[in-house]
Image 1 (cartoon, rainbow, N blue to C red):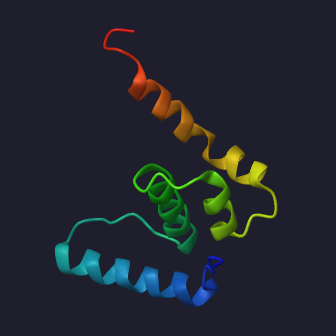
Image 2: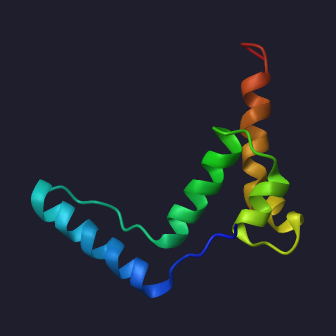
Length: 88
């Protein structure tokens, strides 16, 4: 199944929810877009669920896995750092 960002309607709904949350808490809340949610979902699939990058690439609708690799390469560096022994 391919991810669908939902376009402007979703971004508008997210902005309204953000404003309501700010008003009810009195605290500033960072703006969130559907792209932020898309990226968070992809990171969670790769890191938490240990999904293969090819599967996540298809979910994101990328026509070439290299696009996904380019945008999420930082996760490999995090994984490598976590595997290093303490003090290395």
